[in-house]
Every structure is written in structure tokens, then in C-alpha cells.
Image (cartoon, rainbow, N blue to C red):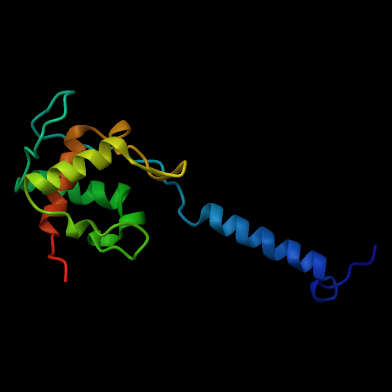
Length: 146
């Protein structure tokens, strides 16, 4: 069987390009399943969500939150919480109780627009302790909007 080079077969060349584009889109984010967060050493908080972050300025929580953020959030929100424009820049969350409320609502409810999931309900995958540890880390990265 004779085969023609891709340049001589526009339909085959188009199929190859389409396959490459589809496969790169499918694998560009790798395994995006939320990763478990080891919160050993942090005070257990129970099932009911607290209104405010109990770990604010807690060095262990910040360390745990740094690791948990990089494993679970950085692929969309950027390394060191510096967004590349794909998702909101989490350094701009207000510090203190106001920011806690925004953070809590988003990690519990996720973000869905027009039926498309932009952010999963992270509270379905990561404990309250792990998520408040991430919030503690984010407060160390806070910047004021320009």
C-alpha cells in the first residue's frame, strides 16, 4: 500500500492536527483531582463550618496551607497565588472576616456558570481544617488592588 506524505493529503494532515489539539487540551492540566491535605497538628474543627478562620496567623496552618494550595489551587489560581488570568487572583481577597466569608462561600459552593464547572466544591474533597489552612496561607500573600 502506498501512502502519501501529510503535505499531499490535506484531509489526513487536518485529522492529525485536530487529534494533537484535542489530546493536548485533554492532558494540559494533568490530574486535576483534589489532593488530600494532611492537617496533623491543627486543632480539629468538626463538621459544622466556622464563620471565621480559626487558624489566622498560625504558623503550622500557614505551612500546611502553602503545600495544600500548591497541590490543589495553583494550577488555576497561579503559583504563590499570583494569577495568570485564568482564575481570580486570590491575593486580592480581603484579609479578616470579610475575606473569610467570601472564601468560605466559594470553597463550599464552587463556581458554576451556564452549567459549566469553573471551580469544584472543594469542601467535598478537602476538610474544613485543610481549607482554613489554605486561607491562612492566602492571607500571607495578600496585596492591595492597584
